[in-house]
Amino acid sequence: MTNEKAEVLITPASFPDDRDAVAELFNAYATSLPVDISWQGFNEELKTLPGKYSSSARGAVFLARVSPTSPAIGVIALRALGPQTCEVKRLYISPSARGLGAGKLLIDRLVEAAEELGYKEAFLDTLRTMTPARALYAKCGFQETEKYYENPLPGVIYMKRFLKDDRGGD
Image (cartoon, rainbow, N blue to C red; front, side, top):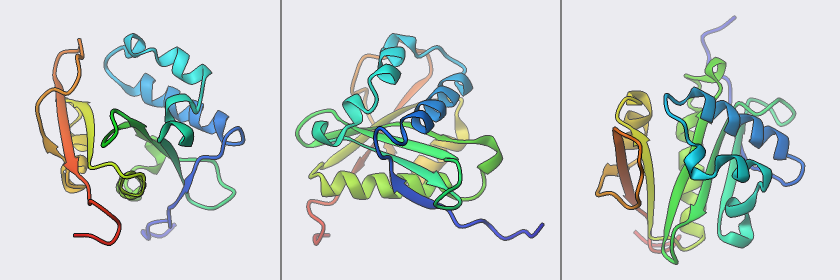
């Protein structure tokens, strides 16, 4: 085995074809957390995929793979918060695929999609204890910000990134 990183491909999830892959990675994400996210309506979210992440709702879901036909190793989702604001949701990379750069590639593709959809700001929340995730978000231009919604969990950090005004702008 070599030390070379595998090439990671980022593609939009196609529904209904990728529904099971997305649901499996979303479930793995929820299981990996040190908190219960059922208060967010997570089970209903799984049942109605793509739901709030659908293109008709100005959302998106992206999958990471190491080849076009390989199982998905990572996921990220985008949903509308308002006309000019969106939220990054459910970033998860399978433990065996961590270190390949898939997380950054997923965030970069999601930011690109958010800009294409006309969003001006992207928000997310994470936990103080999720140090690697926080570092990745910071590397991708997210900064800590004020609370943008009511979250009952302890140790939540809110982050925001300004997006480009248009694809040709600064």
